Picture: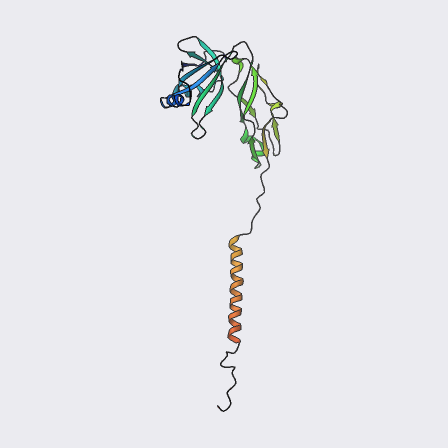
Length: 233
């Protein structure tokens, strides 16, 4: 993570409340809060377009500059998005010290899924865990952690305990219990009787019964022919 970090310019935010936040968004800004040590926090606003560009780079650590002051290293603490449109509506940042280890959530990605024997045999690969909690110095936080699933067979599971991480990074949690990915066997397709064939059989049986009834009526003597001649006729 050495080298020049991305910098994001933010502005102080005096307006508070949901109505003021909506006005900011309409004018092309995203409201946010940056936290420091203890309970210290500062409300800010930032241009939505510039913020999207910085977040799209995917860096866990970047700098902010507030109101022309010194640049400060921060990490993203929380992003709030509109549940329908997916737009970022609020951002929480956390000031960090570069010489102190912190905990952070990092994306977990898979590679080698197409080469996995279980997938080649028709199994379905399920990506179970997509983010992991790590401990590291801010400068050592990786943009992502990659798990190689190219060796997974059908009914096999990969746990977080066997996923390698960069130097200086520690995976946190119950690594033996956290499932990264699994390959399930292909489901059996149960063939259902074709409705058309059943309808055909029913139709044929009904037609045969109708024909038999018609033949019976034709063979039976009619009422007039079966009458005995009246006496004297």
